[in-house]
Length: 171
Image (cartoon, rainbow, N blue to C red; front, side, top):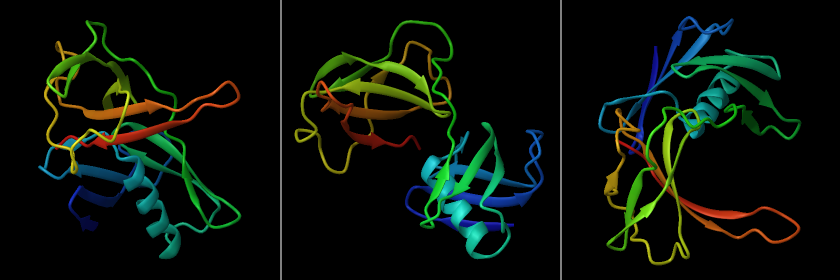
């Protein structure tokens, strides 16, 4: 067992697949408040980097098991780590969640990536407090175990898709 605890959560490395596919090593993630998360994308990259640096994994491509299933890891030629998070899904049906932005409930989209996320589009990220406070959200039952909240400013133009994002991680 290997653990790293920080301001955002805790990563645990254990042997075994969690019943998901062929991965021999699994990542278990806990939010900063101790609640269980399906996984953490940044944590998965840190986890994979540890496996490579400590020679637990020697291939350029391997899989890790998480509570959200098995995820493919790729070590790029320049040494970066890429983790396939899978396609986003909308999860359970229901009314769209609403997030309080500057005193107004703003409709948000409910997505699982693979963790639950309330995604709200805003005109500016500059007006949001730093650090982001615990968001006020009316989830209408869409997120029974909690959710992350993404505040997204669309910066796309006719030629490309771009966005600026600030995230409040649950827990």
